[in-house]
Image (cartoon, rainbow, N blue to C red; front, side, top):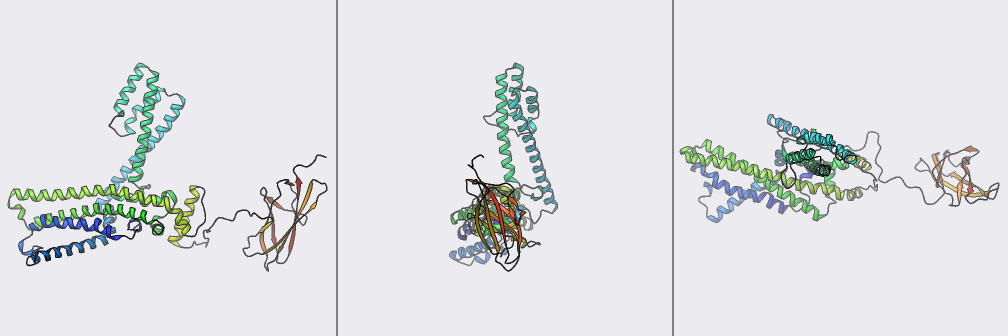
Length: 489
């Protein structure tokens, strides 16, 4: 899903300078201090610059920084994929890390299921008998398997357990109820927090789990739109970016820039530590004395720790970046739907998911094998002018006339609707829509077409299904109506 990982606002200078150029400049200086001294004088990197004046040396180093910055900037997505674990996820270490992450995911899901079951049982206990000592004791005995140990002003599990046992021994009903309510409230808080953390740390499907924490955090928001709305973010994000307001797009890119800074610092720290290690092994100057060897090892360890530190910071920034991406789908998907030409307004989440799933499928694969396409608007509502005629034949043309005659008594009417097919082809599936005034009721089973019964449906307006009509032929529909305030005879 490379599209969702790219800059969208069009303002590249800020992201390039702060996200890439600044880390490269910092670590270039560190390389001159930590790495270059380990190289022999005859191959020292800075030797070509020794004959230059100070200003030209600065220009030369700046040129190197700019070139490296441009290289890292254009390799941003491959570098990000490397940190997510895509290139090496099938390797031995990648497979092991994926199994470990999947085990964490499975354990978290089981714990959520246990907490959810406990909450349901607790609701029943509170509604029935909040002092149900047998059930509450069972919850307390299994509490350690449901939630994590927490510290702070609230009761810990051990204090809960102790205070609960003391309440049972004293048989104080009010204290039992109070303790039970505290346990119920804290479990609900734990459940919500744990569910939130799981939802934002992992994708919703086990098969999508990556070897690294960063990869799983990014996948969790890459598949957010799919889970919530049925939107394939890989295909729809470039289109959504076109309707996102400029200020919001800049906010997304600013957060992505901070993330890039952390990730690039992590990468450059790791590269620099590797260079220092290789330089010390190939040119064993550090081993001249134990103190120099210790200083060499200390540099390597410090750079490795620094790389991991920036990696952990990048995970936190990925959460913030993902929140803005997910919010973009929440806020602007309806604007995109209009821009795509669709006037449909789903009334339920399942209808919206079906709509976006079909739009995503069309964007990926094109037309369906059965050539059925998604309508740009909902079927037209019942007409406001009656009577009217509809047909399954798209190009059919009709002439329609309506009239009434008095019935056998003063309280009834007979309605006549003449329908003529003015087209040169047979019209199929004809339906006549007609509406009675509010003071009239439709007479049951009175609709006829040439003395044949007509299937009728609907409630004012009524729909009369009269079938097919050949070209230039007409049919007369009749039905009865009775006054609502008719006199009794």
